[in-house]
Length: 261
Image (cartoon, rainbow, N blue to C red; front, top):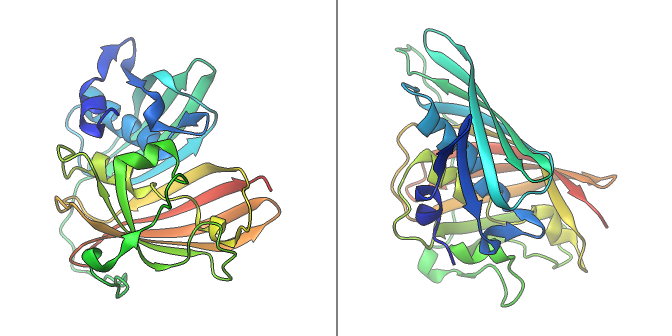
């Protein structure tokens, strides 16, 4: 297995961007794990563009499959006084695999402050059992430790499609950066899978994230709640929130997922 930190360290400059080799242990079916694809876009941007303020939001469209050698090409679309918009294409042998739109914004003095994203009350990590059953985890998931803190399980025929999970990188060298956090946030399958009573293929189509901090804690454990709000016509729309272990919100996100079954 190739640790996350080692894979990022192996990124090398190439024409118009950076190249990375993604081995099979980071695959999700026939393509690269979506969280890693997103992280590669962020890493290429951090290396290729100077003087960026903190990341505030990101949108990822998972256009097609890609694995093996990938090319990340970041481009500054506009620089303002306090914000920067960046477009990134992650390209494989079959063309564009992931297209990202990133917004970076400097903090500004403000008279207003409000937060209403309380973390759910869950058992401590040490009291929670592994989420993935033996032999049922996708290949990339072995890079993470995931424990069930509440909600349902995959393929349980549940009536409420929701996961509550403690998660962390197994790679102890993975830092506390936003890139590392984004790579973790997409770890579980869509909660629509809790409705399943048999196997059905799935594919994430889009992922939109609001980054709620420019100073993520070093972890290692984070709490994720992922809830499918609609499942119909072969698609699911889901809401996701990631908190630090102390209950501080880190990421609020949404995904659109295709369900082939």
